[in-house]
Image 1 (cartoon, helix red, strand yellow):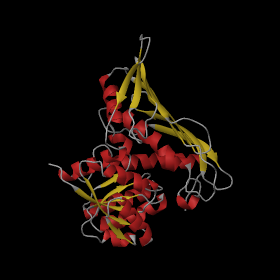
Image 2: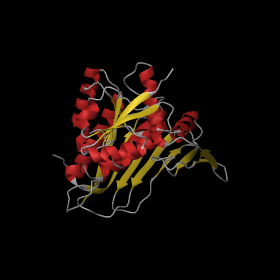
Image 3: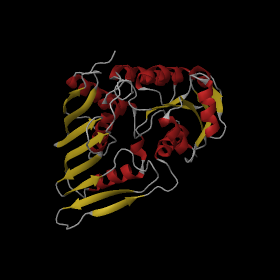
Image 4: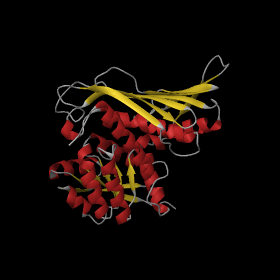
Length: 341
């Protein structure tokens, strides 16, 4: 039986606040502590969420004996340092995506988790939402036949600010790392579903994109991938282009339209997906609801469930899956010409 899991939060930004808001709606999560570089920030965060313990440093949070698992929501370049230190402290780890800036560092964190016998998961929260589970069910049912094409795009039209984390190279900026990782993860997940697995790696991958001349990070990128079984994927991401956030899955007997694949239920609203079948005059609308359960609650419960089984990997986001995603991200960044120190 899954029991309550005591969480500590590393950093106090927007994403950490959203995670804790949903954590409090989970079946298993209990917030016990928060750490920030400034004690006042930690105290404000703790007060806003019911009076958890506040620590004025990340080191102090990791030394807190009541903390069993940590959520890391820092900028991307800090993930490696604090995930490894969390593993060394014996804390289970949920780290925001991308786990690191490259495959080599991803492997180092996995090695640390294995050495210190802690659970590690990259925070692809959308995979645990009922919408994604339903999409996988539909694909495996054969309702749209044999899959031939996946289209997935994630774009956020931003105001250009060279100091903002979305654009600043020192903060791991760029649309590929911040947004493109979702279409990559989604296509690998759906390709895996056709094989009865949680993911599949592409046989071929080609990427391109545009680098902003003022900052050296990408602001728009596209890619194509070829998966086993004759399945192709078209992927895109961008931060300075008006494009959509959606996914379409095409098969020999129909196609599935997913208007909101990456943040389903983020605001607690119901989601809709549409199944277009060959010969049907109108698509079938499927409504996905999750009343009272925030998007991030599902991944927190998945971690608690895995720990209750004695596991150190979560089946929907395994270590091999993390490495596969990082491998493609490296290839995409290299194709565009983006390099991080």
